Image 1 (cartoon, rainbow, N blue to C red):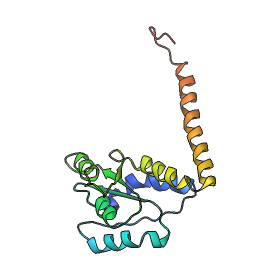
Image 2: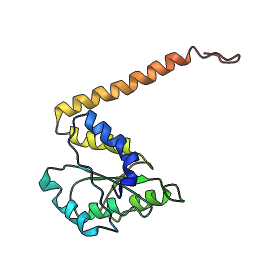
Image 3: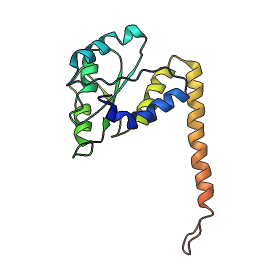
Length: 161
């Protein structure tokens, strides 16, 4: 993440990765304040066993793109809300990458979907993780089915179901 101010957003991703038993790193790296550290992180990530990178940043949000420019690993960008533009500036910065330097981009503050996307990528070569993720998705389905059942008890004069 670009700074620890992004931690409240990224904790959702960390919690899901942890719940799914996916090892991960959390680092504060700034494309503008510590560019050498970002480059070193990106260039050495594969050798450290990293298979996919989730990079969150707000405002100018250069971090995901700089990481993508310095690695062949997939990079998922999380634009973080925090500026006067409510994260739209970060979204545009992350999503508008030049050809050859793609960054998969999720919604503003979409850390949970970034973790899900990373898990799906990792599950392509990890059957145990694929099974755990299938169970997670089944749990999401059950929550909606239960919520729909509970809505049947909500009464309004003109409600027809």
